[in-house]
Amino acid sequence: MENLSLIPENAYAPAYAPFLGFAGCFAAMVFSCLGSAIGTAKSGIGISGIGPYKPELIMKSLIPVIMSGILAVYGLVVAVLIAGNLNPENEYTLYTGCMHFGCGLSVGMACLASGYAIGVVGDEGVRQLMHEPRLFVGIVLILIFAEVLGLYGMIVGLIMNTKGNA
View 1: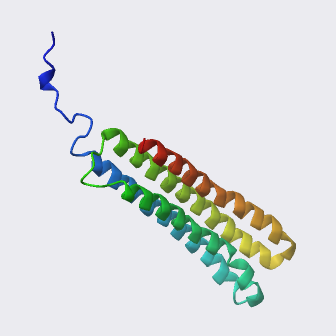
View 2: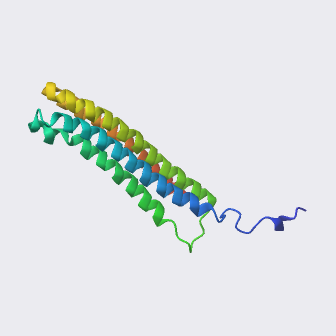
View 3: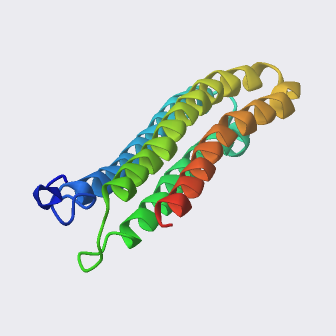
């Protein structure tokens, strides 16, 4: 008969497991905010470039900046959900920690990629909109498809979060 007394009682809830949950919160917030900042900065460069020439296009050109700002909200939602499950009184298993870490990485990296795409499309799209106003609908459609990448990351993160609490 094997001696099972050598296995610790809480082998599936090691002391470092909550670190992974906190790392998931960190990844969700930092990477999604970084994507939001990149999208806002790159789009803002295009907006400030056309401002002196066509000030009437400034309000139409703010769409990429607004869409970039939404990416940070995606990360915030997931980070708050992860943080809500981090309770020192409850047992926090290694499975839950890894799941929350993956959850934060999912939304964070998706929003980072989405923010970069929105920034590139927003910058060049706004500059070309100055020359050809008929491009507006096409630019907005491309921005929507770039934005939905961050939304997909949030959906995957939410699904993972529900599996981590089971």
